[in-house]
Amino acid sequence: MLNENITILYMKNPDPIFYEMMDDLVISCLKKENVKIIVTDLEELSVIIGEEFIFLRNGEQIQFDAFLCYGYMAPKHYLDYMYFNFAAFTAGKITLYSPQTENILQNKLLQYAKFSEGQVPFPRCSASFSVQQFKKNLSQFENKAIMKEVVGYEGTGVKLSSNKIQSTEIFCKSFWNGEQSIIQDFVGDSVGRSIRVLVIGGNAVSVTEFQDNIDFKSNGYSDDFKIESKMDSIKKEEYFRLAEKACLAIDPNLTIGGVDIIDSKKYGLVVLEINQWPEITFSEDVTKLPLFDIFGKEFIRKIQQNNNNKVKV
Image (cartoon, rainbow, N blue to C red; front, side, top):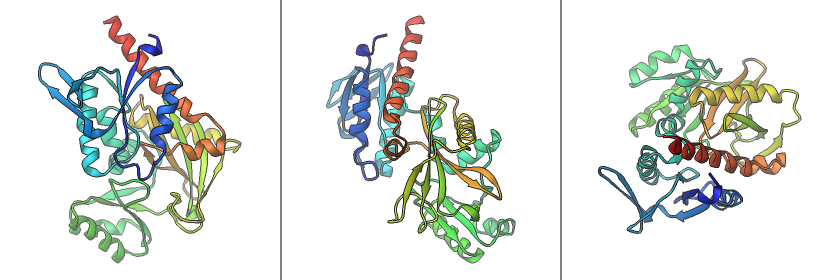
């Protein structure tokens, strides 16, 4: 199928706090492939579900082959996006991820469960569902530990606890707020350092290192933060293999994933998490690789494959 016959419904991020220019950059890379793009806002969309799915924009029916939105959103907007995304996926449209995969990527605890199943190394963690059980499990961890809310992004909800009393306080606050926190082994020999591998279509395409001498999370929010290309590193292939294995553990058809890895002398290479909407511009700037174009081509390849399968049926 020619790209000119492909229509993508692109929903602009209703909360472009972290990725202010991402919509324009993603739309631009898709336009290079000569596809038709319907750019819309969340508030303009609706769906009628009966014997068939009818998708509407401002009350008028629209036809499209794929639905895409990129970037983290406020909880209510994300829930609305998930409803529409689920309907589009169920109706046979291509979406960035399947609803099941998206649910796993949104939750660090679910990611770790899949990593364990896939034999992907990661820092050991524990989930407790009462304060009493949390206190009992504390004996399994060192005094210094990571406390992490299972749903969060850009380092929100991640804290370094200095002792077990502090860990308990953090857990109790999350528990009180109706949020699930986990305790995780602290990898102390890689503070402020993490490896980011960008995986697109199951293949690792770039590797960088995030560095921060102020913030242990190395997520780009201190004045000391910097990012360096690791494309010439002697360990590049090791980083690539682990990142690909981590993505495979979540979904063998994962469109894109930003895999965060700690390179520890004590523990070796361990995966921290997979970011479902990885920031691409930093990696593209330092590696000089056409990462947006690679992403755009992969997304369109999936649309073409899906449309071709429909024709065969």
